[in-house]
Length: 101
Image 1 (cartoon, helix red, strand yellow):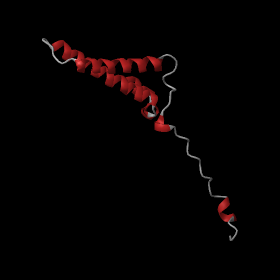
Image 2 (cartoon, rainbow, N blue to C red; image 1 turned 135 degrees about the vertical axis):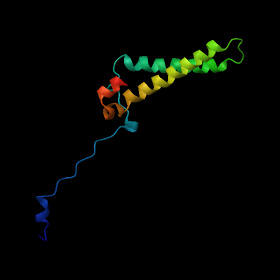
Image 3 (cartoon, rainbow, N blue to C red; image 1 turned 30 degrees about the vertical axis):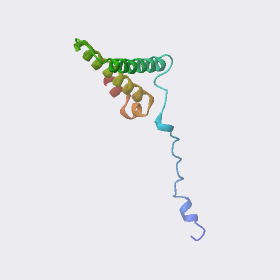
Image 4 (spheres, rainbow, N blue to C red; image 1 turned 30 degrees about the horizontal axis):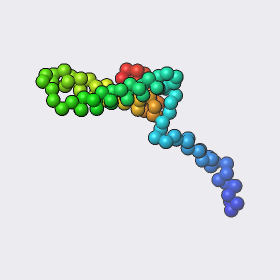
């Protein structure tokens, strides 16, 4: 008992923690042309939001407000999709829930 032989048979070795990527980033779910297409979509929608904010005066602003709503919504949703597919949220939610979302 003094040499520690009693504990060797029942003690489990420590498992190594899986190596985590910085910020949980992974590109497994957006392969090929899908990742660049989604990145370009996000950039274009952000540029549309900025272009809308440049307009100072308008005589009939209904269309401009609609464009602002659509471009801002497109930017936020495409950013959400990028975050979901490129982080570990995809694995934690599960593929079926991501497809429903």
